[in-house]
Length: 118
Image (cartoon, rainbow, N blue to C red; front, top):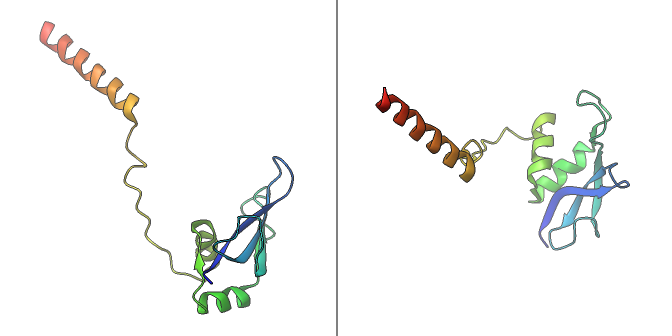
């Protein structure tokens, strides 16, 4: 059984509230889980202590058992100092999209025509 530490959504529409859970990776996001490890309330301010609460002892236990963490929970654990900060690489994030590159090419072409006309 592959265990993942992940978020399970609760709360009503437009009022999210998450439980940090240890769950079988084959179960649905809000489905059956093995153990509740903490809570995450994104509506609270970022500096609030109530925003993320975790039972660190149980989190360490599950990590020792080989549980994988999702990206969002990994970031929370990095902020808490449990995991070392992982280097993330998303080379496509900063590159402009297809339409933006087309507009830039058109603008460059018009600027070249204007420079040639002078």
